[in-house]
Image (tube, rainbow, N blue to C red):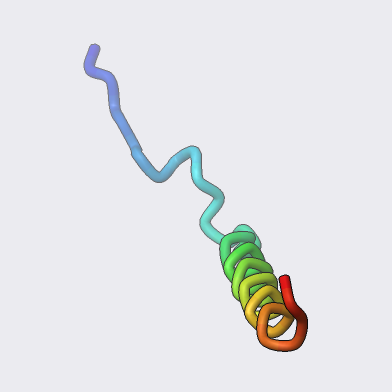
Length: 42
């Protein structure tokens, strides 16, 4: 009896793209940090 291995079986094919939201959050936070640096004396 051979074992069949499907590397994509665990991953849901149509799951929401959580990474996109994380990248948007990081970019917004870095932009806010740069804006605060320009406006105030940190």
